[in-house]
Image (cartoon, rainbow, N blue to C red):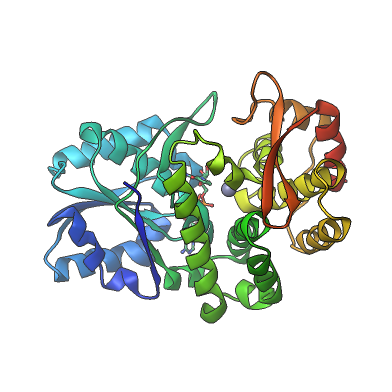
Length: 345
Ligand SMILES: NC(=O)c1ccc[n+]([C@@H]2O[C@H](COP(=O)([O-])OP(=O)(O)OC[C@H]3O[C@@H](n4cnc5c(N)ncnc54)[C@H](O)[C@@H]3O)[C@@H](O)[C@H]2O)c1
Ligand SMILES: [Zn+2]
């Protein structure tokens, strides 16, 4: 079952969308999102006659532990949440990953709704049903595929996001244009300043398009078996390695993906016949996005890339572009991977 998505302003104040979960829900959030939106959501739920328990996770990546998930089970048990009720995850990717994981595993799976409140969440991490937590051995090592019934993107929630979080989300959004649709990429580039300012007229179609694009791909390849979902991984071989090597929390996810896309464009130019004008043009645009330059050792970064989930038989595989909107997955040697990191210097 693949989710539906709602995008609009003020959706948190009229939570009729929880009705698919029945008359009882548990809202799982974290202190910042609770202060800004959770209290309002709980009041609105009460007004519509839905009984709601509340569970607060720690902020940020600290939410993504088995211990934190286990405390969610405690609240679900105490408030009598069963398969005839459900969970509402309200917050950034850390909350939707952990709360979604609790929903996937409590009573072997209960219905849930994802309510991403970061731009990254609304274009990527809050959609697609990949849920999970970290172990000390690595990120996202324990998890499940468990689709939310619906994904609710309240654009008004983004008004309070710091600029850096906005850039991180837009970085991820640019990926959809480069991988699937040149016109969408061109439109984002044209509207860039309005997007940075969260102009609703420019932003709403971008969130709507990215969310629809992600759900379209997930519907065709829910469990990453056919290879189609891999295309969403453009920029992520280098991006994930950079996030880990810089130390989690140093780079935002979308910032690391911007660097990763620059490296993948450089590789595409070398390997797949991506026209030079397109590589330079897209590369220049990505270079104009203000993201911090991480201090990392390129050789260690290449070693990290070998932990990527796309590695097969010890060979690196990258999502590259034959053209803007024309993705392809190609084997890449360690030397080629090292060479494309020139963009970082
Ligand atoms: N499941 C997936 O498919 C997927 C994909 C990409 C990333 N992720 C995961 O997502 C996580 C990162 O998510 P994120 O970037 O949303 O970060 P996050 O969840 O850590 O949130 C970032 C910060 O923003 C704050 N915040 C949330 N909403 C806000 C708002 N509207 N206004 C002001 N502040 C707000 C939070 O309190 C937090 O401090 C990582 O754990 C990553 O592994 C998952
Ligand atoms: Zn991503």
